[in-house]
Length: 104
Image (tube, rainbow, N blue to C red; front, side, top):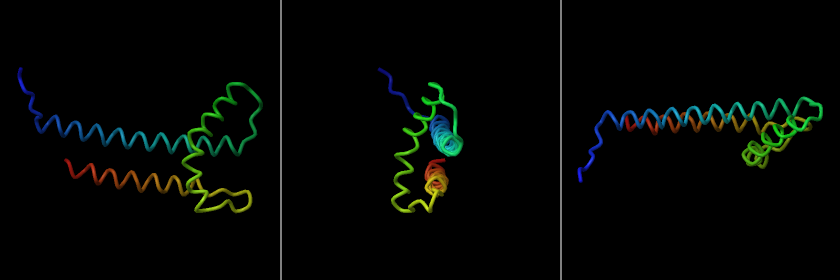
């Protein structure tokens, strides 16, 4: 049985892949939050497909945004929790990039 030894090139490629995955995941989640905001502002006609999409966006975004609604309550009809949520995601992305960058 031969033992496999990880070469530095393979490790750097793995670190780069992890960094890319984290960046793409955070950007996609921010896009989902923006889609959630847009669908909450616009009155869409009833359609089973649109209803499923809205339900998916609600199920994915609301638990995360609920954390920030405890800190910043809605000001009348204006809900600032998505703004705070996106800012936290951007800060998390920078922190993870710098943390993962230490392994380069």
